[in-house]
Structures are given as C-alpha cells and as structure tokens.
Image 1: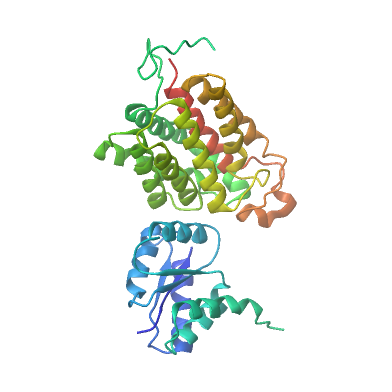
Image 2: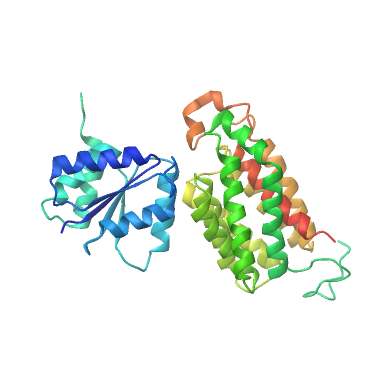
Length: 130
Length: 224
C-alpha cells in the first residue's frame, strides 16, 4: 500500500470531492481519506474526525496530512503534538489544498516514501497556472 | 499588600490562597457561567468580523469541560486544567478549540501538583506561550494574545510584589479586559478577519473578549 494521505477541510463535501478527484488522477492504489467537517457532519473541524481518517489512511508507511486553512491547520498541529512519540508517523504538508493533494496522490501511487510525498505536495506552490 | 501569609498553603478566613483542585474546578465552572452569560455578545462580535460561531463554540467546549470534570473529579489542579484542555480541543470546534485547549493543557502540565501563586503565574505564562506558538500570533494582531499577554504580565507583576492569588488574578482580569478593548482599533492579521483588511478595524476581537472572561472567572472564584 501507498503512504497514506488525509485531507482536512472545514467542509465534508470539499474533503470528499478532493479525495474523489485525486483517486481519479492517481488511481485506486492510493490510500487517501477525507477528514471534512465536524463529527455530526457540519462545517467545521474536529480532532476526532481527523484522528479517525488518519487511522483509515494509514497502511504502516506514515500519513501526509493536507489542511485547507485556519482551524484545520491548528487542529492538525494539535493532533501532531499528541502523537509526537506515537504511531502513525505524521507529516503535515504546507501545501495548496487541491493541487497539493493531486501532486501527493500521484507520487504516492508510485510507492514513494512519506517525506517525498509531502515534498511533492509542497512543491505544488511553484506550479504556475498562467 | 496586607497579606502576612503566615498560613500560606491553606485558606485563611475564607481567602483562597492556593489553586487546589477544588478552586481549579470552580474556575472552569465559573468560565462556563461567564461564557453562557456572554454567549450572544461573543457571537455578535464574531458575526461582525468572523464566522459568527464563537459564542456557540465556546459554550459547547466549556460545557463539555465541566461535564468531564464532574465525571472524573481530577485530584489536583494540574489535572483539572489538563482535562479541561482536552475537552476544549475535542468539543469546541473552530480555531478557539485547539488554541484554548492547548493553552489549558500546557498550563496544567506546568502546574503539575503545585498550587501557590508563583506556580499559577508560571502556568499562565505557559498557556500564553503555547497559544502564541500554535497560532503564530504576536501582540497587536487582534487575537487572544492581545488580552492574554497583558493579563499574564499583570499577574506576574502583582504576584512578584507579594500579591496573593486573588490580587494577582484581579489585576490580570483588569489587564485582559483593557487588552480586549484595545483590539477595537487594530487591524486583524490572523484568521478570517484578516481577509477584511482595514474593514476589521473598529470591532473588538471575539477571542480577546472570551480570554478576558476566562481570566475574570479566576478572579471571581478566588475572591474572599
């Protein structure tokens, strides 16, 4: 299995749709899970929703986490601190949400390691559109 | 400051000298009361420059924190604050959950089973530093830090001059309230409000306002 990827968004729909898009572009072999909204499906962030998505995405090779903005970032950072000496290995990617997700998923599909997958997401900042 | 402190370590004539587990629990219960009483004001402040959920979020978080304390009855103040932090992180939602939650957890860790006013000063400083670190905010960016930083400074100054827990907490509460009011002319540099640019000027920051309530609650429960 690939490195895991978790998408943290305030919006359940945005997280799920971005997962769907990444799967379409990277193939079905990538382990990617949405962590959108609160536990009751509202817009917001929930550390428990993120924790569960990480457990879903983890296949023993670590998990790259991409966040949309604001409290998604703060909550993911708080979770990282909780897991500091534990499993699974987490790497928060400072990356644009959609472009970074697609970049990470495509590289993860090749069997790349955690740090390389996170870096590919972060390098999406430099991919100009015009 | 009028306190001879010869009975330090115990309540003297109804005065709360130390932050023991009972007083720490009372602090969190009082926070919940003040948040509840001010829920609409916090929501209105947040609706002006944020996403309008700060009152409801804080209400949910502190209610969960109080419920957990009633269930678990932690045996020292550090554990009370740690439990509170954990519930705030888990249940608050929004940016205030991880920020306040991390702040209370770090304060609880710093406090451990110590209870005197100097230990509380160090715990509040740890709360401030952890919130600054997580949010990446400094003073005058229209955030929690604008109320908490002056509160911690006032608490340290008062306790350093021999002031007791209530005197230090009262000075801190006044400083936090002044700090929150002083966010009105500031332009937001963090969070949703920062996208408003100059239009964020002229409104009190809801995070600074809720911080002032949290520190006021400590002053309330330590009053003789």
